Length: 228
Image 1: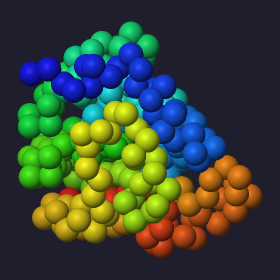
Image 2: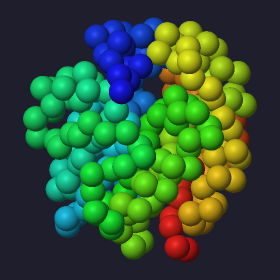
Image 3: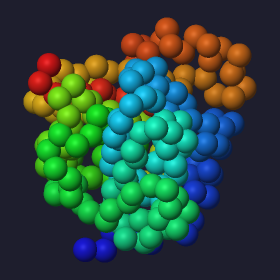
Image 4: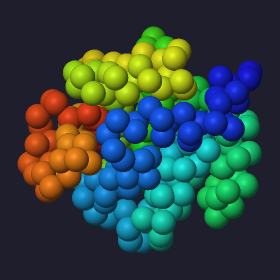
């Protein structure tokens, strides 16, 4: 099946940059911020033989940053868009990429220490989320975790960014609470919020770790730990 993102890959980054320009930051800032959050939440990722799954890897941008941040880890990316994966392989030959949908991942049970999805599930019909969740959870090692990164619809700036995004025109935002209610079927969940301050207020960003439980950040993460 042809993925919607096959049509977007050539201008995907430009469209995203336009949408988030209101924050005063580019995509690299948010991608690196997420990696720093993962490093803080999962300090074991940078050592040993950790394996990380980027679910919905698109053009490989986040996977490339994950590989740079967690250099000793194996990073694997999957996406249903063949053109996106072709682009990702061309630009990130050091990373494994696979074309696959979320219904059946080409990995054995207990393969990954961590799986994350960045802005992926708002492109998936809500009634299809569980199929993907189950498959992601299946691939996690005992003690592993899945981190769902999404946009916070309770934040008015986020809603404006979403409205400006050409690649989100067929997408639907959903709240952290709604995501957490579904993910509790698979383990314990922990909701964190981040990206509170635009660039003009960056001097306040050192406060953000203390605000992670306040549901006003532009973005959120739902951390699911199966079997706990």
